[in-house]
Length: 563
Image (cartoon, rainbow, N blue to C red):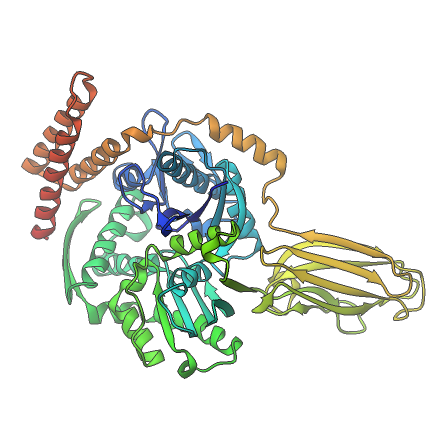
């Protein structure tokens, strides 16, 4: 049985395996390892995934969606053309595309996967990720925290025995984990994060600056124009990673904007975001009972960590240069591949041991005063406890002749139950007696796969009630089966036409951004290419496609130079 590792990212997704030479990334239909996490619908009602969908974010804004990972676990419904999709279903399309790439590469069916998730994903978000896997026709063997995966990728050969910190800034989420490496053992000491902070927020800060500086009508800006602003902002952000200043010029909702942004201005603009990055780092360091000086290595993960100001910030905080010689976009997928090797008990990894922690506190609610109204959370397993772990605590009745004790099980760090995630509940019968005479022992056991077992024992009768709170389906089994069939009936754009579709989508986007004679030229290129590939007599599609691609490269270069 071949298990694949999947990095299901906000911006890009990757798929990998543990091969004869170690972790190996699998290319998609375009020969690339990065597949944009973008889903769209074309005029024929086919689902477009990846590069072809990404290029249509501007030209077909109402039929294309990105950044849906941030809404995983929510009830948000997105309309794409005539379809309506939940975040799990959009993620399932990306997973289906990755699955098809792996099957093409391996020459065999792929049914089992380990999928990475942000370390700070809560139980609902983890369940939604498993649902997405099921909807894509995958059995999710386990989830792996993204910083843990990155640590596996680096830790095998790249890092000496030490205490090190993983700084994982992706497109939509931020995670930080502190690990100990010793004698082929990698032990996670602490983890923290922010599920709503990533590279896209730095991009959005630039977009908001453009709206403000050029007095665009924020309330009435079109969806298409906003996507174009985001693309322009992303280009500015990328240019600032290699240059001290980025110039721009564009037309947004018929308003021409032009100007520049330098690195100092960008740093000032995003200083609130950088302050937010420090909070999870401080929490993880405190939970690990360390100081910044004790961290021997810092490893940068995620595409957004390439920003020079991020490298400088991390260097200043820890007084050392962070490690980033491995591609930060690929680390998590490579680490997921290592985890598949560990799962399969590959001989090359038989001496490697990996431990992890529970990212959130797990507890139950209880009263703390005589009026029985003031409910608070009583932690039973504290966050960042090394797993597997088992902890217990006793509770007692609060009313005379009480015959049942009800337990609500929560996940989270807040004192009030309502401010945490309710995982579920259970009840146990107790003999009627004066208040406080009857009690129960509540034992929480949490394993490496994120399954929580709650065992409740009556202290007097020894009767037990047990319930497992595993990453079960966020949707009901019936809903999953219905949605699986519905998604299976939706036609995906043919994989063997993915390269043509991506080029045409790119050309249409360039056409939308062009004016006058350049637009006429792009239209001619598009029509000629469409006519050529539609004629089955034409055999040399590859060379024509290469020529078409080169023409588009030249156009984009001239467009950027003109700005």
